[in-house]
Length: 479
Image 1 (spheres, rainbow, N blue to C red):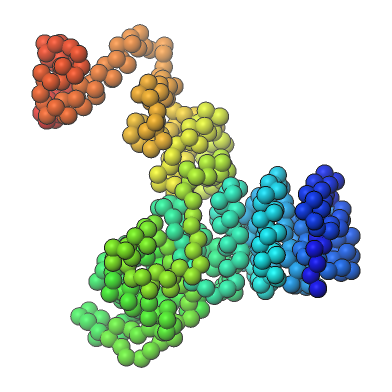
Image 2 (image 1 turned 120 degrees about the horizontal axis):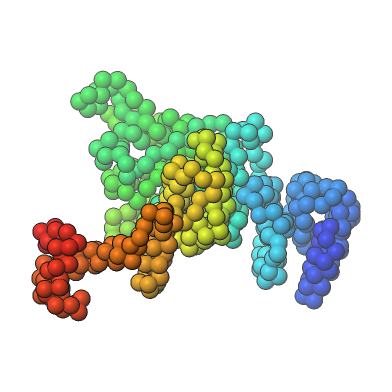
């Protein structure tokens, strides 16, 4: 019988004191344990509304304690708290049946919200399956998705909860946020581990070929079909089929995909026999599917069939605190695969990387780091190794910056590359490089009208003509 009693297990006196004071102040009865053995003994002796346990304790880890608790009393919810914000811990905790996962230092409001959910839920759903040991060395979760930010922690929780269940998942997020990585994490934490994971980009395959790629075809189904070909649904078998950019699927194929999800069977092109579909379907999109539904370019019934469990991936600009972790990971990857010597970024370079908005998200960051590491011969990357990040117009975050700050940023990056022992007219060089694009842009805007261009610049027309000649500006290219 459930009571208002809560078990708190943590080896830190301060954490036990804070939680005890906060929970008793809300009317709960609290039992405290400083180690895993005491927590286990108390848990077996009494009935609890829930248990709050630290993941790291001297005699018994919180994860092992979690497994023991669920073996003895699977209906009692357990909240894991930890200072180690790795994806592996988050996913493993949720897989072992944790009700929630909270990182230190934590806001007591988050704990309050979790307790409210416990009271409303009543009891936990069934324990999830453990990741099969034989594949752990081949697929490391910590190396698949990188991030300690709160948005990523929430993603890890959902992955841990839904991976063992055979539900359809719809992953949304901008290009480059790692949608396929999430799909793979779900697959490799499910009972389908060891079976195929197939990915198909619906936007990359011509409309006329997409149907045959998905469903396959019989010999003679069309001109050129000289033999039977199985499609991705059959090839996936009992594994997972990942349909990327599902928003670009033609309407006629959307109807056929809906039938697959409803009937769990397909028919090859040119065939008549119904073939059972065993694969789990995970779809992904970088578009607003609800908007496409309203525009009647995406089927509403298919949207709701796909959107059983939605996972929204945050863009990199909304989890900037993860950028240093990603940079470290990508540099390590470069050292392993490309045999480069680059170890890290200077604080100035890291600040530049962190402030940039990354419209291409994690994929763009990886490409930029790899390019900089390949071209640099130094052990540490500097702002000069990332010239494209300082160019006006390339960084959306620069929209609110002053022109002076933009120029200063680019100028600083340029000066770092210069050998001042060979320069005696820096002012003239910089001024010329500023004047040339300024005049060229204004000539473009005025369609080559030199009178109007001179007026905008605040100089007379003769001065403008002289500058055009001196700076070798091709007027024809400016028209």
